[in-house]
Amino acid sequence: MARPSIAETFNSTSSDFDLVTPFVWGPAGETLVARAQIALGDRVLDVCSGTGASALAAARVVGPDGHVTAVDIAAELIDRARTSAYAAGLRNIDFQVDDVTTLPGRGDSEYDALTCGFGVFFLPDMDDAVRRLLTLLRPGGRIAVAVWHDDALYDFTGAYFTEIARVTKTPPPPGPRAPSDGPPHPITRIDTEEKITAWLESIGAVEASASILELRIPRTDEFSWSMVLGSGLRGALTGMDADAIADVRAGFLQRLSDEGITEADCDTLIGVGQRPEN
Ligand SMILES: C[S@@+](CC[C@H](N)C(=O)[O-])C[C@H]1O[C@@H](n2cnc3c(N)ncnc32)[C@H](O)[C@@H]1O
Image (cartoon, rainbow, N blue to C red; front, side):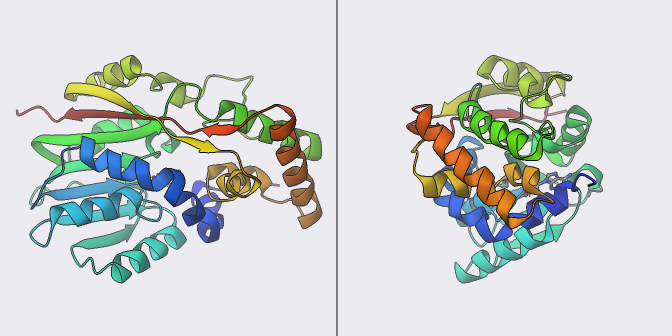
């Protein structure tokens, strides 16, 4: 079975993605916008937008004189984001289905701020891609990225991938929270305040800093399985039949309970910086 593309994986999450929004994507998106110091009238580029947690938060802040462009490679998530924006009466946001690593520069419409929630570590060449995105900002424009902090989710995903391996009898596919015998996942280069600050500076941002949003979600079976189905973790279920998925689900929930995991550590690290003035 060929590995699903990133768009296939995230399109498959679309019916469940927003089950996670009130717990994780939503608060992280709101905080990302606050830390990016987005203000009335700003022009914002939100990349890897998913169903719009940070894009919609930005649109609420920038007001009618501002504008948000939300871009994601997964059309079904963008459809949901568009529907939510419409329902919320936001008319200052447009949506684009695109690969953010190939977005063309638009010299005539530079952005005041660039936001990316839980996306940069999916980009094939993270440094090159984000360095390029920085050039879409006006001089002095702000960049803000949210990623998992340090050990966030590892206990939780450890239980999940153990069950994936048991049921499929193969090692789990690579991913930002999957165990790996190979090279460390790029997220491990940006998962502490020091590392993400140094990384932002290494790709050309200035005035970089970082902070942590503590997000601890009580472990319920409902939240735990929603977190699998409504995130990139779902990719590991691709190609399994319903019985195998039910087997993973039961084993995963039992393991979380047996291991005494009472909460999902979804602590989020937010790194911010600026494009140099010149
Ligand atoms: C974990 S989701 C986060 C979504 C949203 N920012 C949020 O915080 O709820 C990661 C998103 O990155 C998107 N993505 C990954 N690689 C991408 C690429 N090369 N171009 C555009 N979107 C991408 C996925 O489709 C997915 O919607």
